[in-house]
Image 1 (cartoon, rainbow, N blue to C red):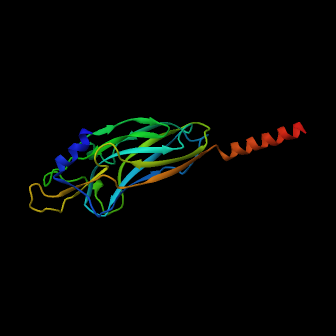
Image 2 (tube, helix red, strand yellow):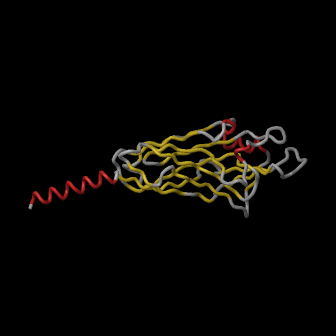
Image 3 (tube, helix red, strand yellow):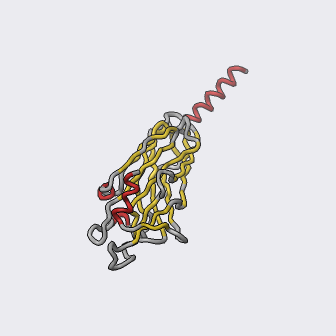
Amino acid sequence: MKNAIALAAVAGIASAAAAQTASLSIVASQSVVDSTMTSSITLSVYADADFGTHVTGAAITMGAAGGAGVVDSMSANAYATSDWQALGFDDFGDGGDGNHDGLVLGQVVFLPFIQPDAASALGNGPVFLGSFTVGIVANSAGIVDWTVGGGIGTFALEIIDVNANPGGNPPGEVFQVAAPDFGSARVEVVPAPSAMAVLGLGGLVAGRRRR
């Protein structure tokens, strides 16, 4: 939480974003998982906005529906570049059953001397924030729906416009977005098709024996 509060302090005066669109999205490394072969997958989180020039930080959680008996661990991973870690990385830990209690991430920006990292620039597609490694229970089956959310602090996403307030002290403008569009991802976990075929064949043989 201390890092979330510090983001605005190092970047400039913050204001609430209004009449503008920001979003957080999830991309799963696999949409269908063979639980007999795969022990883990990755959920990558991205940010995007139609205002500002760079993403400066985020405070996000990860919720899951259907994770019980399918997911046995969740761990957060750090940033796209080492510069994103300059302000720190708070990992709130595994919440169980595919839920994660949250992470806070950010970079140090102090205009005009310390500019945002190039990897955080908006306008060239979604900006990679970080990822979660998800442990899959062996031989499990089910559908898990993940949704990225906020709820850690007063905002979920922070964005700076380095071109605003030119000549100001400090220049630039920081926007804190409490409720961006929260994205989701669905992953289906199934035993291998070959294993399902063997189970079906076994049932057919057992049925014939009973007759």
